[in-house]
Length: 568
Image 1: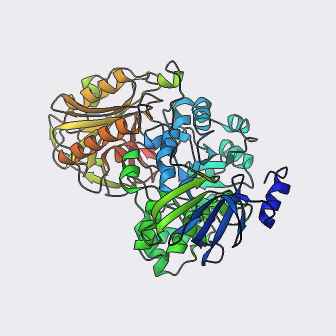
Image 2 (image 1 turned 180 degrees about the vertical axis):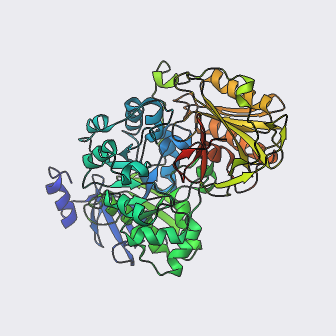
Image 3 (image 1 turned 90 degrees about the vertical axis):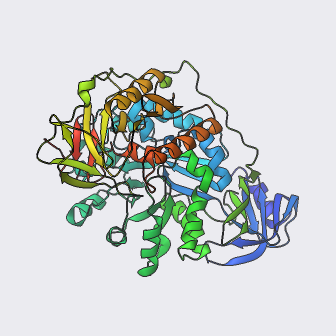
């Protein structure tokens, strides 16, 4: 609290002066006791000063029959993954009740280093929400990665006194962590005593113990109840992820109920969620609704979306609850079971009128990040052996399978068919000309290709298709326009979403992005991509070599479980 304001706030709390705003007669969700109390809430200068009857306000709102709960918190997300500017993401998501965002800007950092992080901070400085940042810990994700910049402990130290920096971003390089690599240890030490986000899918046993010993406080990569149990038993807080490609909420909630787990160790996050999915289903409110549908009590689901996250990140003195001294970030709900949102307030102000405005100058270097040599046709050749290592897509998951199969071929080279697609990743930051090529099972695209410069976390140019001509056409098109998503069929570019800001984001506006992306996704499914596979989100993750089992980089197919490249 700003104690220079305390005397006047205290007068309002004592009822000696009127509040700015009083919510009357609503059903107030108390996340501390689990009660639903019919009472009033008084707000002054954006702060809750009183909970109880008898307060008078300059503005009074009758909430009879409605519910009042704290603003929701997204425990972990990458603002860049929405494809719109950070401010525009807030414009959309805050109306879904998400008033606080714990963002890890490692996408921007991997492309543009400190300038990318500064862009995220600047863009969210004056939005009607609380946007906090975790310092990216793995830029690059692994030492061999071909990304745009390196962000080390010395760079991080410059941000330590920024009050919006809460801790260390997701520690994806768990190998360096558990082996106490000096460079990683420096980063861990820099944020000693502060939250450190985890990223350790499938890590178990002694390796997991060493990871937790490093001070990693949470994980958002759990996809099974067994993984949840092991990590919770070691004290890790679990962020239940429900994004665009990774939808882990239902099995984890089912496991919580089955094992009667204490829910205080759980929060919700979106991690990577496209603006299209936010538009159609919601944001953290979607997580709350789905958890209720799975059997979690509504108040408990709201706790997981509010106070649990605030407590974990050291924000519970001001966020996550309805109590005196808390920031007046509030959601009015029409209904508790369906979490139907009526109105959202940030610091006591209705957010409905907020409109994001583009800030980045047209001549910014962040708009010129494609440094990519043309790809020659022979660079997409994939020789076929007796058996090849193939990436197997798993619906609704980011993890993949590892298959050893004999691929269809002609003249000793892989020829895609209905089951096996070709994938390539092209280095796009330093004009090195590197191109990695592999095979993917169960993506099933036919008569075309899709390509993207959103390819976690190094954000090189990824393309997947069933013929080289369309793949080459897609690659060249993205080189020409400076990055984005594109879909090609039979040599024709059908749809493109330009992402001129670092090849990751657009400031053309939500409607321009959403309408094109919606059409592209529908067309990709029409071309054979199965239900349960989010085509562009999944493509972007197939290049991330820290999620099991197989991935692909500009250097070739990578075996994550053995931390080595496949030698065909």
